[in-house]
Length: 328
Image 1 (cartoon, one colour):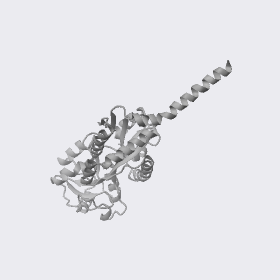
Image 2: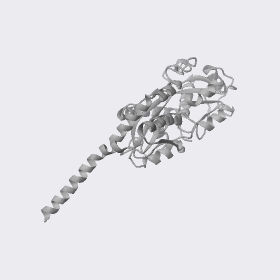
Image 3: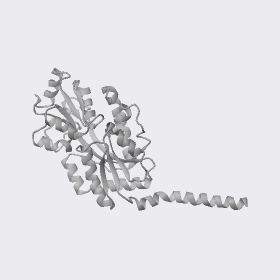
Image 4: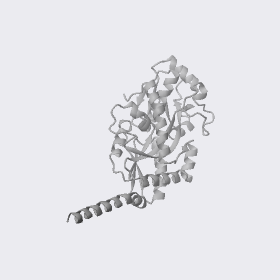
C-alpha cells in the first residue's frame, strides 16, 4: 500500500512539475489575454506620458488587445511603483520607469516600500529624450551665460519649477546648480502641466523638461531655450548650445524611459513584450515623432536595460549626495 501511495505522490509531483515547466510557453502563446494596463507614475502632460501613449498605441495594434495608459502621480512616483510591485506578475500590468523612480529615489528617499532592483524586471529601454533648459522671456537674460550671471548676482531670488520631486527636470536643474554654483529656489508641482502653466505666466523663471513638452512653447516664443543637457547639440534646435560646451565639460542630463514588469513575470512574457516594443519603436508613427523630439529609441533586451539602470544608479547616487537633493 505504501508503494502505491508513494507512486501516486510521485506522479502528482511529476505532473505538477511538468505543468509548472510549461507555464512560460503557455504564457507566451496566450499573453495578452485581456487589456494591458501601462502605468505612468506622473500626471498628464509631460514627456513621460507622451512616450508611453505613442508606444501604447502601436502595441495595441500589434497585440490585438488594448494597451491603455493610466496616470498615477504621487510621492515622486512611489505610489505607482508600489502598486505595480504588488500587481499580479502576468504581464497585464506594467509601468513606465525613468531616471527618477529607478536611479534617484533609491538614494533620495530613505524608506521606499519596495526594492527597485528586486521587485521589478526591466523589460526594455524605450527612449532617451534631451533635457532642455528654458527661461521665461521676461528674465533679463538672452542666453545661458547671461542667465547664470543674473542668478549669481541675485542669489536665492530666482526660482525654477519642476514636475515634482525626483522628476527629470528637478534632477537636471539641481545638477546644473551644482556645477554652476547658482542659488535658486525649487518649486515642486504635481506634474508638467501645472508646472508649465506657472512658467508661462511668469510665476517661475526657469525650468528643465523634455523637448516634447516644451517644443510648442519654444516655437511660439513663450519660452526661451538657453541650453540642452546632452553632450551634442540636437538637430531640432541646432542654435541652442549644450551645457558642456559652455564650460562644464562632463555635464550630461537626459531623460530616459523604459518598461518594467513586476518581479516574477514569466521570462517568455518579458521577451515577447520586449520584442513587441522594439517593433513598435521601429514603426513610422514612433520614429517620426521621436525625430521631431530629437529622441533616441531603445528596444534592447532586458539584460541590456538592467545594465543601463545600474550605470545610471551609480551616476545619480553620486549627484544626489553632492547636490544634497532631498524629497523636501
